[in-house]
Amino acid sequence: MKELEIFVLYEKMGGAVVPLIDLIEDRNMMDIEDYEIDRFWGSSGGIRIVLDGYCVIFDSVDFHYLFKCINFLLHSLFLVHGKDASGIFPIDENHPDDVIVKTTGGNVLHLKNLSREDFSISYKRSDTFNSRRRGERFFEEIIINKDVWKSSAGIALDEYFSILLSIINNSSNASGIRTAMEFYHYWLEVK
Image (cartoon, rainbow, N blue to C red; front, side, top):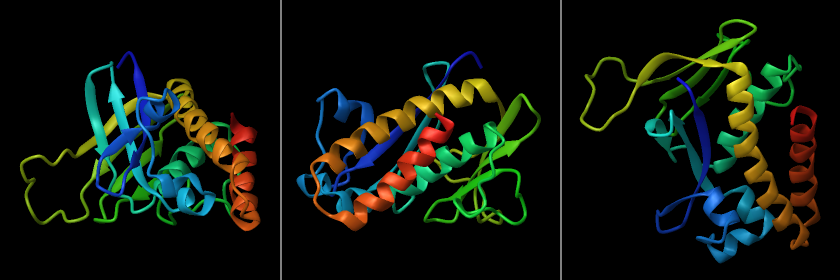
């Protein structure tokens, strides 16, 4: 692997999926309702992970909430920086040194802490009894350098938080803003 790109994906109400970079560069727009902080906070979405500019290893919006993916990426950067994530992010009791997120279908995206330099990433199905169906893309133990991951996750989170801050600046809901700013400050800790 020479290159890694991570894209945060926003899912419109009609099901269209838009990378956040397209929103930032005005090539697309969100549903009008999602420009309010409470709606954006609960919007649907996911992530896309691309190796070497062409090999899409993960592309899913099966997370119910976009923020679940942001938690996954932010938690991974806490791990890279050696910061304690307990009390902030959900910790898998069977893999406390790793970052795990489950899809709404129960499948698992697992970023395993291998060493000081490397992660491995796997996407495993929850139902191991059935054989793979056409179109399913599961994989195990792709090695990713932590510095490469940090850079790629950082770009994806920069895009997310730039949109979030723009929405905060145009919102009036104090309770939603407070929670959003809390996570923005977590981002600043590991940026």
